[in-house]
Image (cartoon, rainbow, N blue to C red; front, side):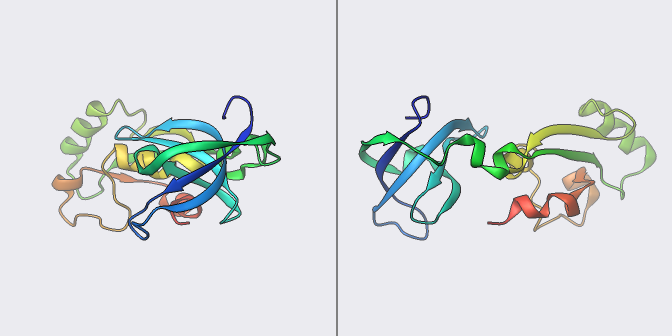
Length: 157
């Protein structure tokens, strides 16, 4: 479906809706977040691009006739380059900061991770950074996002 730009009728469950709900999606890319597989797709019900966890699909999807008009080119979040910048927590001592910089291969005190808007939340998850719950002890978190303000549009649906 991704390769041929086809639409799929799926049954999908979520934490908000544990009973399978029918949706028609136009998938364009499979994504591994480091923990689980997702498909990036246009959701006709919500009228926007979203990520669907593959293990939450129920049954066998039905392929719809004809190509979708909602392909990868129209997915703004997917097509917007974003750089996530990680740096050592400011509460660390200079010696501790150097250790963290070496651990993460930082250059000039920071690590720049190229991504796209749609994948920012997965980058932060991969580095075990929860932007909503920062640990007050710098030794616990060790790293923080230097450009969190710039990333906020990509963190919340």
